[in-house]
Image (cartoon, rainbow, N blue to C red; front, side):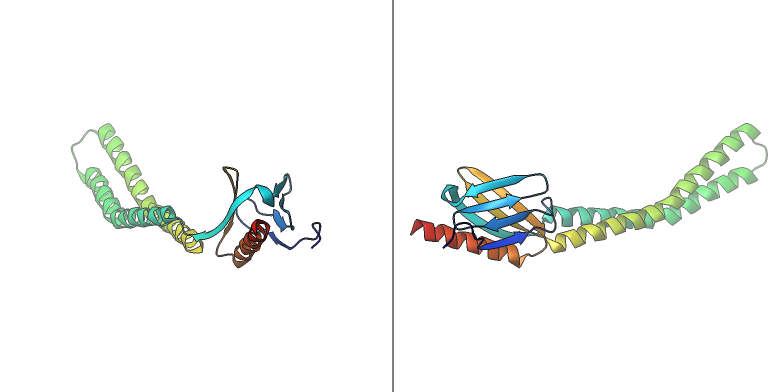
Length: 179
């Protein structure tokens, strides 16, 4: 087998290394990116692994955001109505000093406007939660090349069978070298 002929290669299309290319040759793995180049001799590799994982932290954050969004949505209308009713009562009561009334009416009206903004904020939080759930659902496929106590990690979003096939090809080459 010619050591200069590539056995297989894969382009990483998502994740931190998007645009990078991994190429397997008979005696090495070559990682090329827009601003980096690395050659890992197969004789230096101790292990290769590939895993598909979902990040539970994204789901946890989505649940928290949904809970906060529901609380804000539930509080928005009653809080707004209560604050506006207080400012209306103050405006209707005779016999108070006008300057104090004006300050209180203005303050409760401003708080009512803030309470009105809670409903759109709840909608925005719900959208963020939906995005986190989508990222959780997609998950990541991670290829790990272990060489002398150092792991080289390549991750892509979603379930990537090509990365899995690449890991199998590297593992086959490692096994062939050890035999």
